[in-house]
Length: 210
Image (cartoon, rainbow, N blue to C red; front, side, top):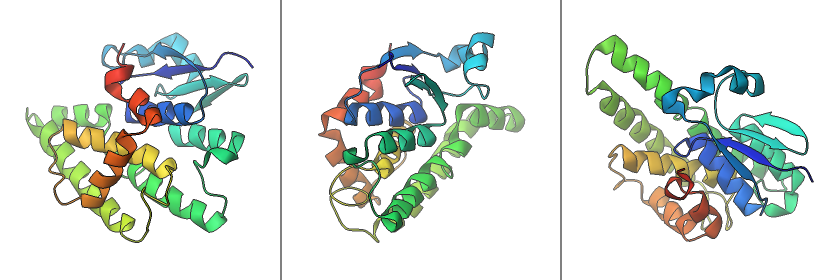
């Protein structure tokens, strides 16, 4: 097997998701840090690898993969026994719905380049914090309601799926920005269960920081 390489920023939610997935599948990998704050994602070399200039990028099986959820689904199909996606088609739709609610509805509008632009156009120094708290809290409120439809220890069932790989990094961001989580009891409970698992512990930004 060719060397697996993850182009990663330690605090990126999308990178965090993929680190958890690789750990769950016990796939060893080399990390190449891409410092988003210093603009390394806009270098010619990196754009040749990932034209969007986003992280993560995963090089595996001689292929260059981008977009965190597409990467996770590739890994899930590579190792279906890992349980990242359920075997039943209807259950997979439910897991995708939970994952997409975070990765496609909350995460994009709370991305660093979006928030930087908000601060610029408003001219308000505190616009960033207000923006983050509002949209993360609103998004998690909706996810909490969605989670109420399902039973199990985790977001869907009794083992982590792609939904949990999206939820945990978003909770990390919520705490980072001072979002009140007291009304999100199911989310906090799931996050606590994930925090006890080695795959999640090793992927945590505090462990991944260069």
